[in-house]
Length: 296
Ligand SMILES: [Fe+2]
Ligand SMILES: [Fe+2]
Image (tube, rainbow, N blue to C red; front, side):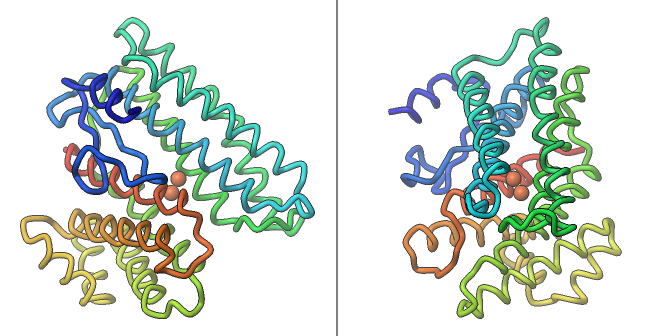
């Protein structure tokens, strides 16, 4: 099985996260998240893991655009999206099939991924503007274009940092970037749920508010989150007593997303959320937590 081969290949340098914590994936929508061991600071190993993660994420962004671009509304843009999706799926497979680059190859490896990301980032910016101005009438929100553009730009910065030989995560950068992403995910979920899912929509909006406050940073952000959504923040801290407010909120949203992914797959939750999108945002929450634990 593919995942067994993968676990074997990455043994020694990598950890593989799954929803259940075991070795089996919850078919057919779960994808594993492969990261360097906590003690591993080798930039080439990080570049491989982050490029592996990000190229799959980019392939999915483009695929989600295509799903939200009916041919009647956006035939040309849809065809472009599908082409991007294929390019990144191919690149992802190439990276996944190979070991991390040698130190002498690190720059070239990272630059190659960065260069390939540029046209997709441009596409997201261009279509975001078109959708915002009404020139494009697809089903992709302007914020979804912006959100995915920001992720592309962030992976670009990360790979450029790694190309310089620096693998360390800066806690302020990690928190600033991902709290905004988590806030937006929560609002995406709220707006893609069936309008009858009152309770989940409310939970999603409260979660968004917590991350928007935490995004302000520092003790002021935590105080604002506690003030606006005391139940949600205190609930997170009680469930994760040894953690700070940001990490406990991140664990809570990961838990929410994992349950949502399972509920959507089993059709216990009514929504227009594609199960692949549900797993996508779950993996991004996992990456947030992993980075936060490494950050200094
Ligand atoms: Fe994403
Ligand atoms: Fe995202």
